[in-house]
View (tube, rainbow, N blue to C red):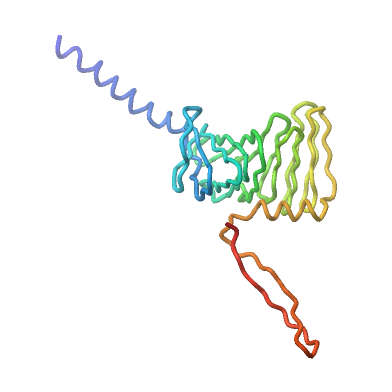
Length: 232
C-alpha cells in the first residue's frame, strides 16, 4: 500500500511544479514604482490599500492611486514611463506569451503623462477608460479622464477609439483627441496650452527645468540669465 501511494505523490508534485509557471504567466510582473511624492497608495490585485513606496514591484492587476498634491512615476519592464498626476488612479495589467509582452493600463480617473517605448512585433500597449481605448505603439503625451477623455500627443501616433460607438481617429504629434460618453470622438490641432500641459505632465521631476531672464545693465546691454531648477 505504501508503494502504491508513491506515484500519486509524484504526480501531485509534478502538477504543482507545472502550475507555478502558469500562475506567473497569468500574473506577471509589469514593472515597479520608481518615484513617490506625498500621498500615494496601492492595492495588490484589488486587496486592501497600503502606502506605496519607491522600488515596489507591480504585478498584473495591481492598482495605484495618488492623492491631492501627490505624484507617482511607474516604470514598466520595457522602460516605458507613466507619470500619475494628483488624484489619479490606474490599474496595470499584462499578458506574457513567450517573449511577447503586452500591457494595458486602465485609467479610472485623473491624468497620466506617458512616454511609451516602441512595442515589438506581436506586442500591444493600450490605455483604457470607461469611455475609450487608446492603442499606442511608441509615443509620448498625456491622457486625462474626467467624464470625457482628452488625449494630447507630443510625439508619435495614437489610435483613439470610443468604446460606445466604436469610432476611431488618429491622434498624431501636435494633436488632441477627445472621446465623449455620447459616442463622439474627434482629433484636432492642439492649442499651445494643451501642448504645454502635456509636456509638463510627461516630466518626472528629475530633469532640470530652465527659467530664462533677460537682464540689462546701465548701458542698455542685454544679458540672459538662465536658472535651472527641479520640480518638487
